[in-house]
Length: 222
Image (cartoon, rainbow, N blue to C red; front, side, top):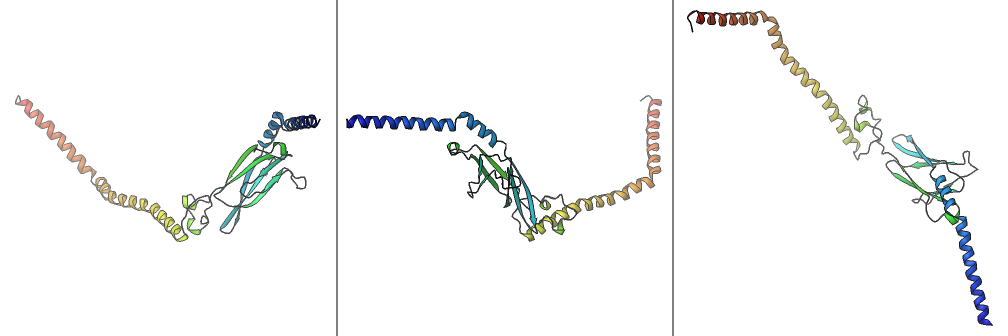
């Protein structure tokens, strides 16, 4: 009798386990996962710089966050989701992010049955910032690479000034060389212009002499 009861209890346990698995499968089936992935694919990311003197940070905005979707920053552990208490429930702005870094955001389902693996991953890469780009030394050469706002370099301020001054000197050098060449050529050109009739006379005399010599040879039968 006891053995029979043990068998019945074990059978009930197996049936219960099977039913639990079926419920789980129904709650996170293929169709549900497909819908969640579609929602996760609609997330938008954008950023804006916030400058304060010679320092700069970024505000990153995550938008198109739908109910049931959870966004996780794996580095900090912070979580973001649809929240009706915000003015824009489907949008969140993260402030104070550093330049020249890449931030990773993983999207999960808030449904625990479908939350085992991420639905999507987003990367936000923020550009490097050149703290010297507004320096007065860059006036007039804003297009020079070291005067670009978004530039990664490891120069100290003194090294930066040295490089920019060297660049300015290189801009002036070709102009001076061209001016010197022009000054060297001008006297020669002026001489030709002033005495061009002499060159023309010599040319005419030379041609006449050649014609005379040929006719003279012909007259003697050479």
